[in-house]
Structure formats: C-alpha cells, structure tokens
Amino acid sequence: MNDELIKVYPKMFKWLFVGLLITFASGYGLSLVPAFTSRLLSFGTIPIIVIELVIAFIMGLRIKKMQKITAIICYLIFCITTGITFSVLFLTYEMFSLMSIFVITSLIFAVLALYGKNTNKDLSKMGVILLVSLLVTFVGSILNFFIFKSSAFYTIVTAISALIFAMYIAYDIHTVKLLANELDEDKLAIFGAFNLYLDFINLFVRLLELFGKEKD
Image (tube, rainbow, N blue to C red; front, side, top):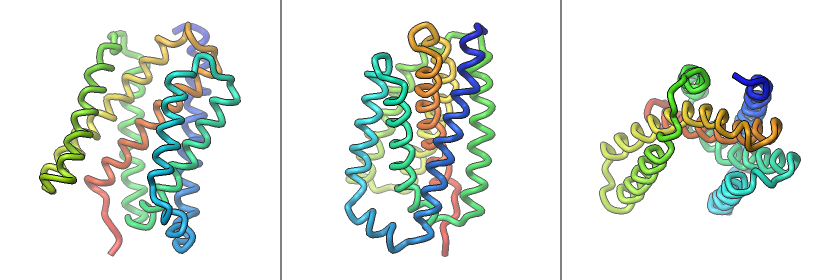
C-alpha cells in the first residue's frame, strides 16, 4: 500500500463516521418532534430525492475538478437530507430494532471493507455487474409496486438489493486504490466516504425492511 492510501483511509473513514452521525442524529432529533417532521415531509420526498440525485451526479461527474470545500458541502448536505427521511424510520421502528440492525450492518461493512482493502484480486470488473443488478432490482421494485403487488416478490428483491449493496462495499473500497493517482488525498477521502456512505445507508435500510420490528 502506498503512502497516499495510508493517509487516505483514516480520513475517509472519519468522513464516513461524520456523515453517518449527522444522518442518524438529525433523523432521531426530528423524530422527537413528530408534528414538525410531518409538516416537513408534507412537501413530499420528491424534493429531497431530487437534491440527493443532483448531488450524486455532481460528485460522480465533477469530483476531479471540484474544490475540496465544495465536495465537503455537497457531502454534508446529502447526509442532512438523508437524515430528514430517516426520521420516518425512527417513528416507524422500535429503537432496539434500529440499534440491532445498525450493529449488524456495521459488522457486515467491516468484514467487506477489510476484504476490499486487502484483497489482491481485481474487483473493478464487478462494477458493471453490480450496476446492472441494481438496475434490475430497481425495475423489479417498480413493477411490483404498480403491477404484481406481491409481498413475497418484494422480500426477494429487497434481499437481493441488500446483497448488491454489501458487495458494493468491497468494490468501492477497492476503487479507492484505483483513484489514488487521479484525485488528491482530501478529495479522494471525501469521495470514498460518500460512496461508502451510500453503501452503508442502503444496506442498513434493506436489512431494516427485512428484519426490523415496527412499533405497535
């Protein structure tokens, strides 16, 4: 491992921790004032989704030309907007269930992150396979929502999605190595944290949908 990567990984995981802390803290804080949360979400989740998609595209396409401070601002805004939607999870699921799924997600993340970081295998070819698989599950979810309306099919798609995002953890950690010569240390840390944040959040939500216990 070269010297740059040795410095990047601690920074990347620091930003990942900050992002997750912001999301979960803001989500929990909003859940304590359900009236305000309901009013906030009464505008719908479409504006939030649009903001997140715009930031994701900007980070993906412009990260090489983006200033460090711009990347940080985009990342933090994304974490905050995700926190707004997470308030619904705190209102829907029992706290013990949320904490248990968080621990499980963290353990899965740690194992696959270590694998992606230390493996000598070329995982770059996984990118296309994972992307296609993710698109297929997305289409399947849409079809099930409007046409099939099958709980069994929903469970299968959710389980497959969880597996895909788990695999993305190893892939995105591995990708950091490939980008070491293209991005400076700080931007690589933020970009890597952003990708891992998406993996962690999506895996957490899928596992929560599969195993989470809702409030009575």
